[in-house]
Image (cartoon, rainbow, N blue to C red; front, side, top):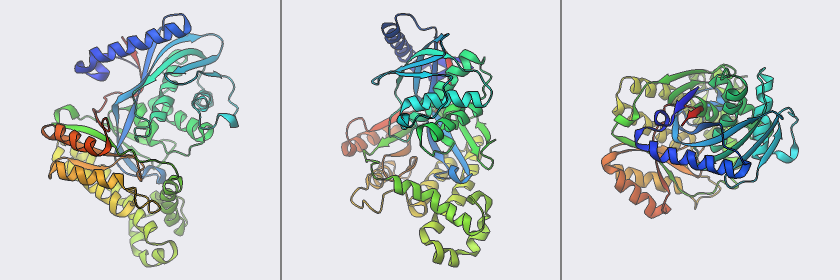
Length: 411
């Protein structure tokens, strides 16, 4: 799939993005001694509905965003992938060597090797190329910079060697395979799917091998709101146990009923067995399970509101989802770090500034990091000023929803 800069970023950003691509081309030429032949892009993503539901085969509402990672590319005939990302050393990977390398774990080289291996596992061709990449996807923001990089690499291989026959769903699955098996992070499929497909999408993960995806035709630019991601500058260090406990506790409820994930258990059965579940697993596991069911149902309602162009109803559901994450999922702060509650602070400020308009909720995994807010345009300046007075200059990022996922770019 190929799109123009104007199609991807909109007319208002066309000039700035054209300059960005030209600068990437110049960097490529200075590095490799030749001009790039092709350009590719993959967006970051935002989770809008379905907080911590994908890992238990639930439903998610997500969207590709205007921040992305781009690549200037030339194919080579030696089978070697050489990727130089801005600010990092070059990764050099033999596209035919799919062995997992222990010393590459948690590196971009592992992602590249894993994507190439994943392509071959699905019967697609791989080959060599030179690439220079640059990204404005905020690291650690919950916008999934790693997923965007994986999707970018897979799109390059799809475009160069497979005539774009690799579907967006397959690209997402290949990217997840790379992250799980080679990078060493047991992520769900939502990040990669949202980056690969783009726009507003619902994803039903009942069957993770063939998730059901529906694109929603909604012009966010006409809503009168802007999408803001606020970085509270909280550290994710030492929070791995907190993140791991969420899917584990949800699965413990499923296991009580002899199942693997909550999607296989009826909500009514959980309700009927609350007394014994509380005794065996504790209250938090039960509350997190109930959040799972309610947020999955909200995804369908949020999608219906967007289709009906009922943005007020959509915003109300976003606030409900955020409230559920706060009360029942309980991923707003870590109990082990009671003095660090940046997300709660940001949510309070958002509620104060929005004054009954818009919506705000935790963004992504939670415990630290970012909140997401839908801010009416007439309150945007005040919202940014208040947030940055607390969390620092540049902490509030104003985004738009991108209509396309991973793609080749025609300048």
